[in-house]
Image 1 (tube, rainbow over the protein chains, first blue to last red):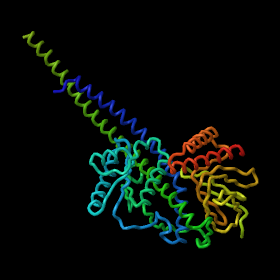
Image 2 (image 1 turned 180 degrees about the vertical axis):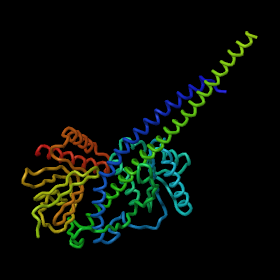
Image 3 (image 1 turned 180 degrees about the horizontal axis):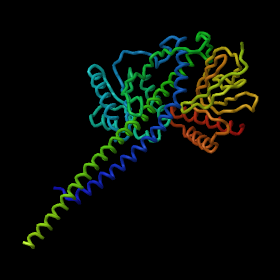
Length: 289
Length: 135
């Protein structure tokens, strides 16, 4: 049986673990709030751009921009967005597993490579010896718009050079602090967007300066930048949400464990006292007799 | 009827910089500056790095903006640019450092792709300094 001392030591170690998980939970909550704000701040720009893009696209022929061009799909690239750090529940496992299933099924008929954003995805796919075109790791701590632009430039270059005929993205979409949805979307070629036009003015009346084609050439890469930026922020907010929930559960489990151990400790203590008393009583009786 | 004010929104990927009503706006179009007054015909324009100037009864506000795009409607303008800050918010030291860094990179003359970026960075830095000194 465990001695009193042993149980006491275990209680101490569980308590200090609990302190860590509690602190991590609070840090995650603070970071979650920050990344949620960034997500909200990024939204008007993204919506505005999508809006203009739909106005312009409504008046131009498809195929006017190389990033719109549909080709026969032989080479696919998957951009997988994970986190850099662990201890966030099934966050990384979800996105990695979904991406792996997709890649494996695509591999049967096409050549597939991946670009990983986040250390966890890099470790997952490099350990399994998947072909990795490029990696972006340890950026989530100071995530900036220019990181999204870097990724976007690379993707555009790869697409225009015909290295890939389709580029997909796999990431965790932020639904609420407790819920993330693993999502797969097509980045390139750009799918023609249909946005309802809420304005009272007809889009036909637009004048373009310079031409519609040049405007399109401007907007499409910018729209891609913003789309990638949005997914990075979504993923980052999801990560902190997942970590908060995981650390909350861990803190609760630790509490449960402490309760059990305290009970065990008290029982053992009681047993020791009872034994002691009965020994004393037994000794006294022996002396009397 | 032509409204006498025009709504303007300036948006960057990071945040909404401005949402206001003004008398007129001057924007840096690819082919030169142009002004927009209320009642302008619907219009989409690409913007280059430059100044955005708002006209209102108060002193007109001045902004340093990176390249982007503007959508003009008779009663509103949406300006979507990479970066934008008010003349009073420009970080002069940072802009000077960026200018010097870009200049030395251009002189080193590395790969063409880098050169394009350095040139764009140089333009942005010069624009910021110009706006800061005018504002």
